[in-house]
Length: 245
Ligand code: ADP
Ligand code: MG
Image (cartoon, rainbow, N blue to C red; front, side, top):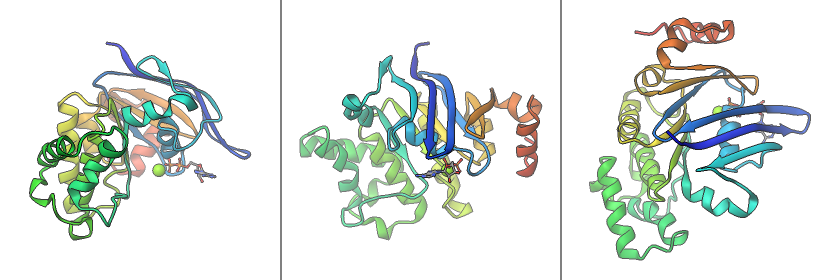
């Protein structure tokens, strides 16, 4: 399997503080990587460096073998989709206009074609009937599903999720996770920062335990959750009171 994403010695410093410390890994096409770890360990910064919402202080990121540079940022923005904890939908646009916005402005997709594709994607996330609604009139889970459809509209090669369900009420977390699982089942390559260990156990190809700016340990979920090698990982999982099913 070819690697679609390769990270080499990625480093990010904020002043004196080193938040990402020479992290290297590669992700193959269709893999789902779940990134777990304590708050403040640098998980969000890692994702933000991957899609250049933050400029790395050092190291390299390659997408499909091509190094991301300041000149190839437009390619990165197309190929890497991101879904955040907070939905960031445009409040003044309808749901379908939110999904059409990227393709229209960045890809210059004609309006009719962008609309057809947006409807397909809204159907995929179970919200075709909300196409003409405003984001404010949707539940948090519905808004997050629109955010996923909006990211998919750019036809990304890799999707990044940063605690996409952390801000949601417990009873609607499942509807977002099931859309994410469906995407994974369809073969989307995904990096998912999550505290949903059941999801990680069911969906992840590999779990990365992140702490102090490093991947402390990585492996298939059954290994990380049942027989973690590192004390740090075991302590973290114990704190969550999560012992696997
Ligand atoms: P996590 O997502 O694992 O909770 P973050 O990546 O958000 O961790 O943050 C890691 C560390 O980097 C924290 O100490 C945080 O305060 C610091 N940090 C994040 N963004 C900035 C920034 N823009 N400026 C300064 N420090 C930052
Ligand atoms: Mg975070």
